[in-house]
Image (cartoon, rainbow, N blue to C red; front, side, top):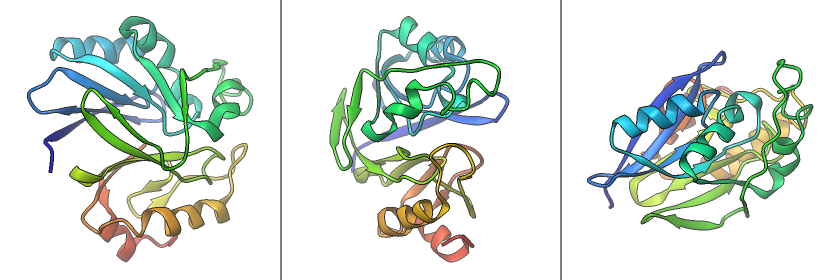
Length: 209
């Protein structure tokens, strides 16, 4: 068991959860889904003594990526996403940013593969592909600390919407059942919106699965 800590900043018109993960006693943080206020996130973390070591995306919808470029420019950190989400990230129509009135296209520095294990600044995690909310939605799993950052795939007693481009409810439910439900029941789930939950709680109370 390592000593990871996780913080949350809730931002934007969709009340998106931006998470930062760090090892206790260190100043390097991994930032997940910087919502729409990259400068605000950068300054807030800097005030707390953190530097941004990487920016990671669970998917490419506008409310999760609007803050990416500002945060990347200020921090110099690289942006990571799942390889199947490339089109969503890079196309303002597909990621709905054009329809939301603020067109945005994001090119990740590194596109990861399903199951790829990554270590950044001593923090290790695995990308779990969970298509359905979008075709390249993914989760990030920190096995030693039993932490799952689930984006808009799995919520407390709910799942992500599938009525936007590349979404599929059948694919989403299959992703959750096959990829997430086999995880240990005490894994803490940190979703893209709303409050945290656990795998065990969702097994018992989530009506979608």
